[in-house]
Image 1 (cartoon, rainbow, N blue to C red):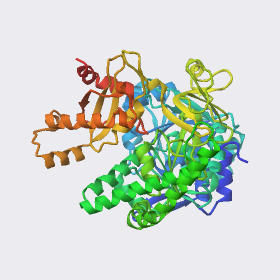
Image 2: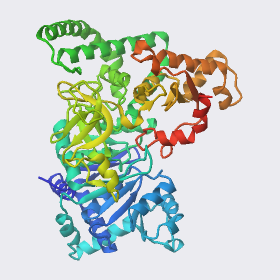
Image 3: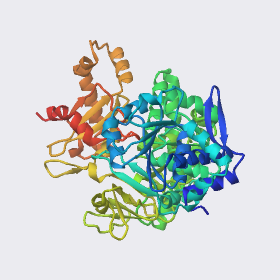
Image 4: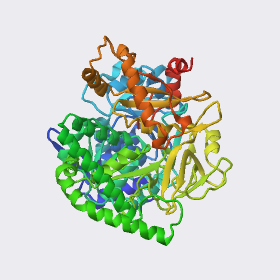
Length: 635
């Protein structure tokens, strides 16, 4: 059994040699790259890197978006005994400079000429950086134009490696086999939601824990088809790509834009897609927006069958004992639950069969018709989105983890897809819920999530103080997330400890559930709740301008500019009504959680600025950028 990623890819290249590993869109089709070819490319590129001077324990930058070459570069670097330091191409020059300097990087891959020039522009501030390797060499460059560094191409290194291997060079194979499970495979710098990025050191052993145990929870197997849309450098997507290579599945590279994604769904007909909640929210909103333009009869049919689908799904989950519960159930209580649920499910079954022909099947066809499950991670899935896809019989398996845990801690399974939870723990993982004093809490009690096991990171690079703050001497990691355990052992995420807002009255408010509820409004695209040390909560709201402009046409509102639209009394009243309707006692919110004040923003939060790569809001950045807007709410 493989103990390092190097052993894993070598074994897979041999075991699944003729099967497709990666797929690249060329025109109307996806062109496959076999496991055999992938293994050969990795050896050639790795040999070229060693010839360039890359050695054991070096740190190699990998600055690129999602593309098939990414995994080749990654695995070639690991095979040299070095570790890589990945980052997306939309990272700001300031953040790239910090990471490359902090990690003491001498050699870095860059996606294209644009990234090369971005890094070269700050080259004088990076005295250790000697070599840049261009992944895409479509635009020819003259190395003499970049005198500060040596410029190479990925193709050139592969060609050099091929020549060396033909001459009997065995350095790459020998070095690759010498790598140990405790060796660092990657340093992933966190997205900085709460401040300066920290470099998470993950070992081969950390990641291989997830690779070995992931398929035990979700039965991914040889020949399964994946569609890839997340940044390859993000730990969730990256580990899932390792998992599919471990079992002999294939990965087709797409993009998280509706037009491209829907086309690739139809072409590839994937069995799985790895995503973040925002993708499912966008799909949910797109479906409902399209339906809102249909006739009243079609809208009525759609909403009726969706409602019945959700009701039927919950009845079946209750019948099977698969809704979350937090205490043992008495026999008469469970008997009554089974009886009522069985009758309800039986009565609804013919309605659901009709709904499947009229509504549900048409939605599933948009995903290619072969989707076994969407795997969602990187944030909490909103309950109404969770209910909707379950109701139309499209399975979404929500998981949970952090970069620091390689990352998967728990994931819903096919056998126990308990809604509103992230499922049971992966094998070899321990979780306990503790209060502020570290006392372990029983099921159903909310507290801080602590994780222990072989998946927990080695530490933060060159930052022992930060490491000691999150990992106890006996190996428990404080995730900073809030959650609780169900009686049957599923984990439920309820918020983020660091995000907790404390009002002047001393009330502790978790903003995430409020934000998730607000995003149920068709008029709200993005939102962040504020109010630290204030009497009441407030909200920064980015409208869904497409829906808002439809509303203005229907109501006859006239405006000269977008800013003028957001200041219009009727528009403000619309959002005031939405806030009051959604954040109310009937929806389970306390009076103290009501939002009496808000500001509408004309510009969307952007990845790399206000959002992380997985679309989480960076609260510290938004608080700073929109400080004046926040202050104006409380004057």
